[in-house]
Amino acid sequence: MNKTAQTGVVLTDIRKSFGNVDVIHGINLTIAEGSFVVFVGPSGCGKSTLLRMIAGLEDVTDGEIAINGRDVTDLDPSERGIAMVFQSYALYPHMSVRDNLAFGLKMARTKANEIETRVNSAASILKIDHLLDRRPGQLSGGQRQRVAIGRAIVRQPDVFLFDEPLSNLDAELRVSMRIEIARLHRELGNTMIYVTHDQTEAMTLADNIVVLRNGRVEQQGSPREVYEDPNNTFVAGFIGSPRMNLLDATWTGQDHIDLAGRKIRSPLAAQSPQEGEKITFGIRPENLAVTQEGNETIPATVDFAEYLGGTQYLYCQLDDGQPLVAEYRSGPPIETGSRIGLSCAATHHRIFDTTGTRVR
Ligand SMILES: Nc1ncnc2c1ncn2[C@@H]1O[C@H](COP(=O)(O)OP(=O)(O)OP(=O)(O)O)[C@@H](O)[C@H]1O
Image (cartoon, rainbow, N blue to C red):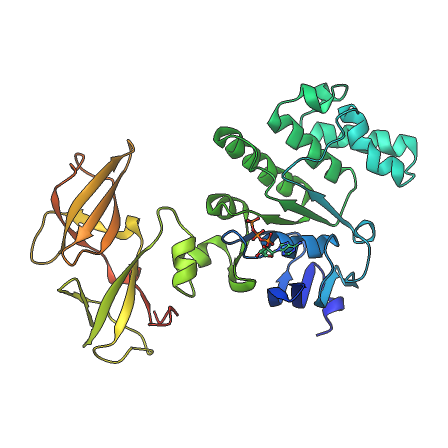
């Protein structure tokens, strides 16, 4: 299909090099109109570079970017129908909030009454009406970030781009601003593309997550898909906190694996590894059942029991020395140093081959 006939944001074989260093290696992505997409990945994986190329703040070395059916690859940022919110707020300190909100519209020669309508509407959506006459220096961090978002709203863009907008805020404010941004998306319904290295932010905001590593897409899917059905050990280990346990094990055939000297039944689908083949056995902390040590369970020693009130994270060691985290919710707290037994239903087993690719 012709890429420019599609709505939303379509990236076709996007590449980026800085000098002779290739940082984005041919990314193809379709971001549906009206969706909230989050780019996540470790530091340096190319999240911001990709966002800045969509914004037009960075040239693409090769490939095409289309927004709502228009090829914008070579257009200036102001011609793309986007508005970007930066981590640093980028407000003008000598101007009032009202003038900060209005500035871009004035530059674009928007009529005064139209500016007033849009500024008042954005201020009302963001609940900053009472702050319009203040200067940025007289605002809290959270209020400044609202003004920065307001400046994007008044431009009525097709696509909002957020580059780690909450990372300068303290933990509590980050949570409340996260809820605000989710509300904003529901109210406005625009396409939003959001960059963060915080996978909790990604999970809670996104309807679609793009997991990046070294300038490549490792997986794109709903939060549930990337959490429940990671393509590989990288995604499995990156999404989720505490992360999925990824343990060395051996496929022993006849629907069994050997983990730390214990045989576990784990029926494998069509792509079974060879008998005796090494595999990586993945299991989320919350899917481990903690009981007393016994024949039917995997024995472990609790190195550290973290008590969080409603739940406990048990940092354990299997008898072959492999570390593992188990989440424990029922029963009285377990003490550091305890011996426990672990079990897990086969539906929660995730099996990866030696290349890290998921086989089940
Ligand atoms: N102007 C530049 N010149 C040279 N290399 C750059 C430039 N900008 C970014 N890079 C490199 O490109 C790669 C991707 O950087 P980018 O900022 O996109 O990563 P990121 O995933 O956003 O990281 P972070 O989470 O740390 O912000 C990094 O290796 C970085 O060093």
